[in-house]
Image (cartoon, rainbow, N blue to C red; front, side, top):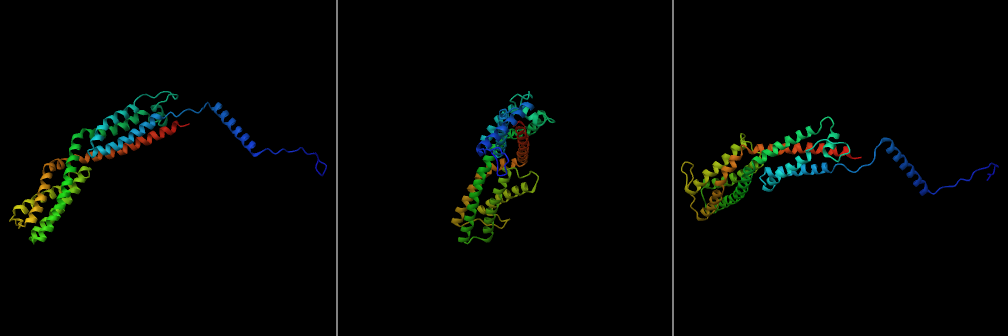
Length: 301
């Protein structure tokens, strides 16, 4: 075939775009397979199921430690089993690169550290888990006492406001009205203190602990003074029938708290350590999860 200038040209056959794409893909595949044969690498299945389970167990441990520190019985029962399962996942020796083994994956990710250092991280976490479990009965007792006392205090606060209203209605003395208002204020203050004790926010040597004891002492002084009178404090006995009925409700709620206050106050010295253990477990678990996440990525082809 010649063009208009008399030059011979070979006909060009245009290939369909689909054929061109398939040929390019085939070439890429051949190069990929050649590279695998030269480097000795080959795709392999995921070798990190144990790492995934370990990460899950650690996350569950973190949540259960939080709940256990608040006296949750179910979490305190689950913690020993969770601890044993994590230890069983971390146990064992480093095996060959072909082994489907968690320890191999961790050692590959941290060649300078080795599994022994990861075991050290876990042992630091375990110390705090053990500390919580050692206080199991105390944590459960404190949770029950705080729950009951907090509900009683909320009712006491409501009844104190009702007492103020009845004193105003029956034209009670100003000192009686002020004392009734103090009852409501002390009840609200104690409720906040009980929450802080249960979460470990109160330190046995700080002003919060002193404030809690002060609020409880004031409450204990005002109630008998309103019921029977107190000349030293200038308080006369409440005499109005409606006011006395409202005061009886306050006294009934106070009687429910009296047997519990010892358990709550006695926990103030040791409960902060439980709070510290919870935070230490949180930090330790985060470090272990980061380590296992890196280890899993190192085994991904």
